[in-house]
Image 1 (tube, rainbow, N blue to C red):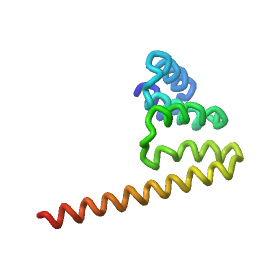
Image 2 (cartoon, helix red, strand yellow):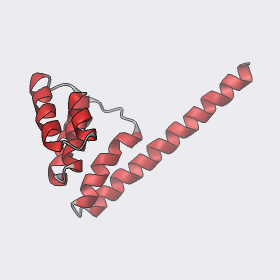
Image 3 (cartoon, rainbow, N blue to C red):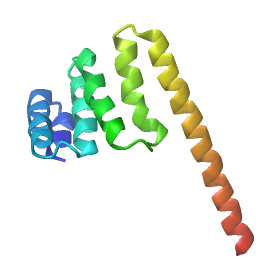
Length: 113
């Protein structure tokens, strides 16, 4: 949390250091890996941003589609356009599926009331 707060304030160096220390203390925390990926991306280190993101994905395979956005952005910035496109297609497909499921749940709730 502290590392993400530093990143949101634009203090990327401190955010990256804090998140790396958090990962050293608990390497199985997926949110620290995601936070590090975002901080690296926002700091301009896009080439390094995909590594912690991939570690996070290995820890939690079932991610909401929007989680993939940072990885797609990192690939895009690094001119890895075909990889970026595949990731963004996954974002869109996942988000559409989640939206459809949410609408089905709302309809079912309305029908039972």
